[in-house]
Image (tube, rainbow, N blue to C red; front, side, top):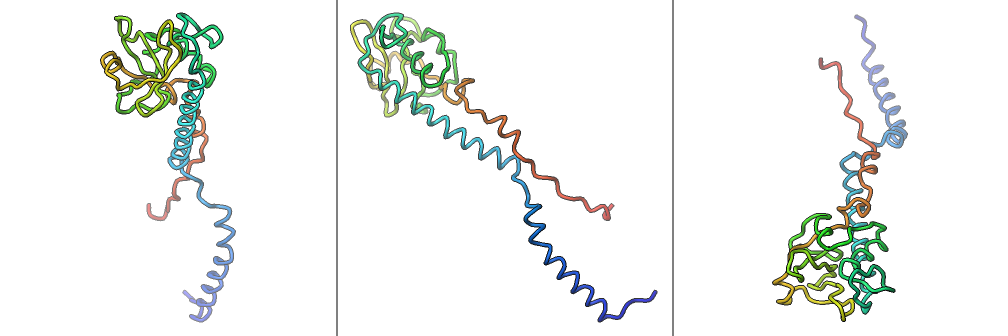
Length: 207
């Protein structure tokens, strides 16, 4: 079989190389690999975590604005007075738009359990103050403090969770922000919508 001269072959190779180099920027600009699903999902989850943190801070900040509101058994608004669960329910409704159950005992079944050493602002803390478990509830603020509506004749106040009175009566804590539907940022739809990195091309010549 006739082969072209070596000089001709070298020229052809050089021309091809020049052609490839000339096209490389355009190919790189048009075919840049899309972010993988894992990378997009990670970024989305980080954003959701930040959103949940901000919501928890908003819950705590809003609750602080209710200090001094009169206690009233069965009370649901600052104007009429608030009891412990009424306070929690009012705060979450105003900040998140989510309606929680009416009683502390019912609230104790919502969200996820949290150990006392893992408490974060916005978590609910529960106590036995009426001779049955989960009869009292407050909102944790951080630094061992929580806000609550104590009892008749008292106002909404902040107290320390590590006081002996509360330590003896502590029943547990629940996390709602980032867990309860309606308080959880929408991350599933965003992650599914993220572009998926195309699979690597297969060289059929190997098979």
